[in-house]
Image 1 (cartoon, rainbow, N blue to C red):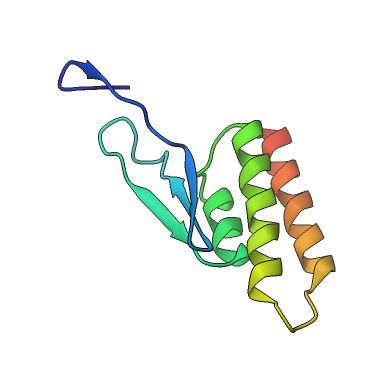
Image 2: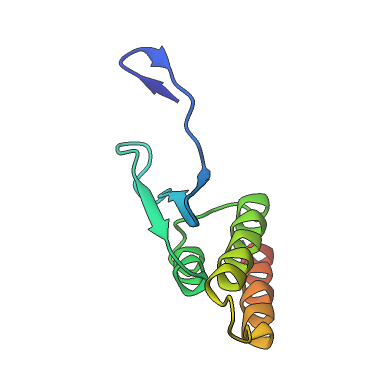
Length: 97
C-alpha cells in the first residue's frame, strides 16, 4: 500500500497481549484502522461483517478466534461445539465468497 507516495507494509492481523487486532478491510483504501478482538465472539462478528476478507485470512482469523476462546476459558470448560460451529461458519462464509 502506498501512503504519501511511499510504499508501506500493512499487517492484516496482529496478536498482542491475548488480543487479536484485525485490519478493518471495510475501511480500505482510505483509512488504515484495526479492530481489537478480546474473545472468539468478537472474531466471529468481524468475519460476519467482512472486516476480514479472503479465504486464507478468514481461516487464520477463525483459528485465532478458537485460541482466544481457549485462553479466556482457563479453568472453565470451553464450549467446543460452539467454537467448532463458529469455525464451520467461517469456512462457509469463505466458500461463498
